[in-house]
Amino acid sequence: MKPIISVIVPVYNVQDYVSRCIKSILEQSFKNFEVILVNDGSTDNSLKICQEYENKDKRVKLLSQPNQGLSAARNTGLEIADGYFICFVDSDDFIEKDYLKLLLENIKSTDSDISMCEYFLTDEKGEKISIEKFNEPEGIAILSGKETFKYFYKGNYAPNVVAWNKLYKASIFKTLRYKEGYYFEDEFIARPLFYTAKKVSILRIPLYNYVQRAGSIMNSSWNLKQYEDRQLLYKERIRYFKNRDKAMYKFAVQQYKDWIVGIEYKELLKVKKLKLQDDFRKYFGIRSSNNLKLVLKDFIGYTDIRILVKVKSIIQSIRYKGRKHEK
Image (tube, rainbow, N blue to C red; front, side):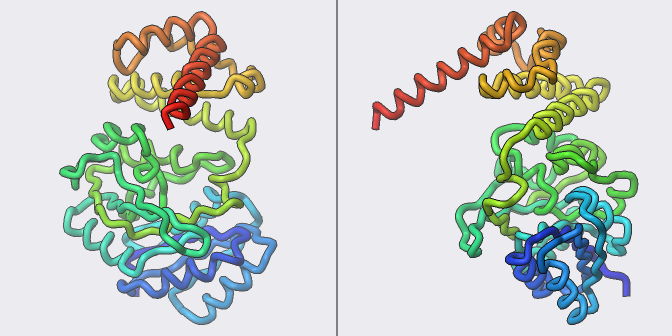
């Protein structure tokens, strides 16, 4: 029987967490699904643990490949997925018992292309720390994929961007795949993914547990490759919206310039090869709004972004000392 949902789980060196993850999937209240475990060249006991679950439950499919990264593992899973719907679960995370049931009911009842839920930040022991909520106002439950961009890049936009708190119609991945060999894989695909979606529905219930652990990709040390990939992400976003959406194009440019200014001064000196000064001047005058603060930042940055970065650092230091004094 064809599964309704394909759950894709990339696995890499998570022997202490993967059993909890797989168990949370197999114990779902909704039962008609397949679990695609993609072992991405693990060197610990992760593969052995996955094999044990494959032998115990016929819904589990296990593939193994040389280490190629998270995006490649997800793409491998997408190639063999049989479900009408797709969802992703990271192998160090785990899901609530009704995760599949409630997301499926939501996506069906609204005839959406993507249904997304809130999620818990959880410690390594599984204790819940807090709930991550959407930027969208409480009154909004359904909107088009294009409309999500009004909230997509504001404040805490992680719930909109991440791959794993969502259920997708499988058809939406017909021509889309994750960008391999780069950081920020969720952000790279989010733009075309949501721009393609005709309807997106929001379920304001936390159903996913995002585990905070020191050795995860998100908490790894910052490096030049991450700077390069972040710059590429912004530039692709600018190109994508330039001839599609004037307002989003201006907003994407503004975000890129804000990122440039947000780099710490010492780090800025290490990434000269990115030609950030040239880019800031290239986009001079393109702003998300014409308020005085942005205009002033634009002019100072055009002159020398190092001055702007220094000024921002000084202002932040003064504010921090002021708050400390108040306490």
